[in-house]
Image (tube, rainbow, N blue to C red):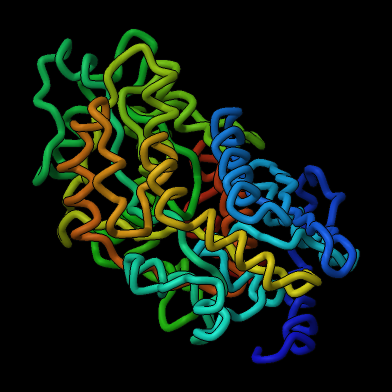
Length: 417
């Protein structure tokens, strides 16, 4: 994967994602640059889940032009789940944007679309990776090559409705709470048409339960293994929350990016699992106080996979130096402080992390820091995007008790190859 040509040949391996037939959003638009010596226009592709998020990213685009007046940025966005299929579709047509959003778990899926960022390139753009948390720097490497510069990272955590717990006479989730504590709360809070918990069949969301229960990750030695006993047992426990225990809200197939979080925000559920990147938007939308706790401890403790995101340069970009200059700004100290203060990102830059804890997020400090301390670096595979899509696609029937969990996991394992 060391040359551009070999990386483009490798793209054939990810094109299979198109066969899943997912909706494509905004599939036009490559990067455009000006004449030699003239202004440069770069297209930046990134996912977003709200108008507020899009405004955050366009603010960073303006910061690039403020620092480099000869560079302008055209920001293009779509939802997280559609984003990866969009990249495949664009690359199939021989074009992508110049700057691409990269998520650590899905970096191998699009590695053929990204320029390796060696020390010389990074230094020329004024980027020092020593300024970033080493776990997410490593997370944006594939086969030892750095493919992105990080902007955020973090583990999945438990969101909970503070007032709902108080009204039910339940102690607030805190460091050291257990799966048994979670189940007690979920049962108590499931009443009057509302549920203790909301979930969706996402491999990302099952994994922290599996890590906490038995220390089992679905990727072992670089290979997907969904049918290993520990992960199968965790998945069974997870789907039973809906179909057997009935403490989690029923699930319907949807193309929405955050159906479980949406139920939490509406007050239909009192707990859900999501990442720190969603907290400020969630807190703005709810009519209640949002608390944050680490994952409930199981037999192996309280653990979640640590993941994060950053930005890379497309192999199709004809102005890679300008693109990396732009990335140096949108991952720079000022930009990450801005994102932290907006609550959009728990910064990958260590010096800016304290800025994330705005007064209204002060209650999240202990839970998030404990979750980071006990976080597990998450291995991934080149087909992780396809696996995640298949898991969602077939998981609804499993959650609703229509497909046995072993059959569901075997189906995803087989279809993912």
